[in-house]
Image (cartoon, rainbow, N blue to C red):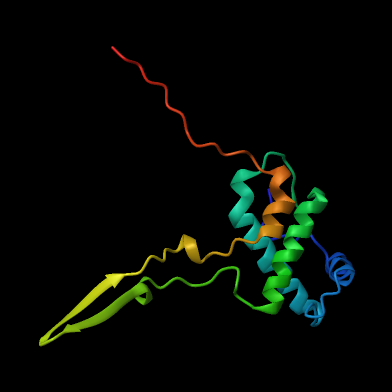
Amino acid sequence: MLSYTTLAVTVPEADAYAQARAWTAWTGDEAVKMAALRRGQDYIASTYNTRWSVEFDDTDAPAEVKYAIIEAAYREIVTPGSLAPDYVAAKTVTRERVKVGAIEEEFEYAGGVSAASIRPQIAIIDNLLASYLKQSFGASVDLLRV
């Protein structure tokens, strides 16, 4: 399980991964990159820690998990805060005025946005981690008929 305190990836590892992909936005001093790696690891931990099919900690995280952390960190370098956007329910309310002839009505309704829907789903991260995640097929319940 990934920690929220100890990084599983070093800045030199992230630099090598970024250089191999020619990421020009992977810039900044070591403190900036470490902060992005921290936010990236927090994202991976909060999203996937309950779904790992294998046991590991920060010191022996599989390479694909490290790559996923770096991919998440890259998104944080490019757009800080993008992995954990704030959700304000009041901002999803929509008002609409409709006028037909002399009659005018105003409608107010909640939009189809939920807190879960604003969290990014990043295909490369999902693909990197796929072989390390438990399969989720839903739940089954035994029924006893009498």
